[in-house]
Amino acid sequence: MTRLQKPATRPRRVLLAAIAAGLVTALLGAAAIPRPPSLSADVSGDDELIDTVHQLLADDPGVRDRLSVAVIDGGTVRTAHFGAMDATEYEIGSVTKTITGSLLADAIERGEVRADTPLGDLLDLGTSPAASITLDELATHSSGLPRLPMSLGMIVSAIVSQYRASDPYGATIAELEQSARDTELGEREFVYSNFGFALLGQALAEAAGTDYATLAEERVLGPLGMAHSYVPTTPAGLRDDAPTGYSVAGRPADAWTLGADAPAGSARSTLADMIAYTIAQRDGAAPGSAATEPMAPAGESGEVGYAWLTTDGVTWHNGGTGGFTSWVGFDRESDRAVVVLNGTAATVDDLGFGLMATD
Amino acid sequence: MEYITGILAVFFSGLFALSATRRGAAFARSRVELVGTGLDAVAILVVARALMPWSDVSPLLWLVPVAIAAIGVFLAVLRWSALPNLRPGRPAVRSIAYGVAHAIVLLAVLVLFLG
Image (tube, rainbow over all chains, first blue to last red; front, side, top):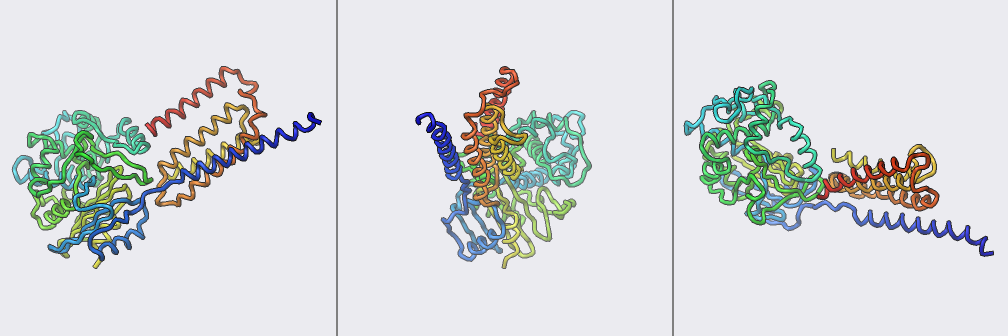
């Protein structure tokens, strides 16, 4: 009788074990369900602006966390913070390019460089095609340089950094120059280029006999009183407790400091500082604010000055890093300016343009 | 790019569940193969969880590959005792080398990601 029972008992035990294993797997999986961060409920600022931001974001899905917004009409400033305050630090990403653009306009006014100064006069580019690129071609994204250096190392770095939510940049100036020497130029028409702005910033620093971070501090950030803004170029250069943001997947992202590519996007700032910056650019009071004037066609974006894009009367720039996005813009006709600083990598372009258009 | 990881998670979980059945081209012929396919599914689930833009799609979609993987585990336990450790008809050295190489690749993927 015992022999007859064994075959029936054993499969049942296995079946129970299989059910248990499957259930445990399902429960562990369910417990690990993704929980992306959402827009902070810790809100302060102008009630009407807070409502407007909520309405605009309802049509603009994406991971949210901290967010700071300012709408400036003439001299009247309205702000809204979500999980942040005036002094909360954000990476401003490619809005840094507008600082670099201002540095070029300022250097031209100082007589340090000319708009048509060849890049090869300032950086060690030998007889490579990149040596013939002029500074204003770099500043208007019309240099023929690609968006990024097309080296195998850069491609691998971009893939790995996306995988690890880390900073894909970090080249030295010598490596940046080597990449430029190795690059074949395309047509000299509008192609948005981080590579070009990195070279431009380093060239301007060379012309001034300093490094880019110091140049930005001495000629733009300092004169505008932007005491909480700075340009780190290494992780060690970050201030204490420098915040990090979230990727589009809601994953914590490393800070971006970019190394020699810093002039293309490593600046950090606060809403209060960016309000001062944007008002000064709108009013033509910022050092090198001639950079905001349209100078060349920019395809679907309209026109481009030194970094600044002008689309349907709005002069603007956006920024994005692994964990932050930003948008700054102004319309001199309506006298409105807008600043959006976001603690995630989800775009805020529609929010920026939306705030420019609201009553 | 990010959405592809979600599709891959469903694909590899499905492949694991199929490998635990007795039919079809995908079925595992040994315990090593079954474990390898299961680890593939786990690795891609980890990557998809981290890279998918979960604010743009419902996080409940995560439960789809998880449910498929759970069915795979259920089937794998049922089939485990009927499977040899190594694939019959293949030299043991080759099976072990394949299994080790597979494990190294998976480990590299996870270390790169989590490291």
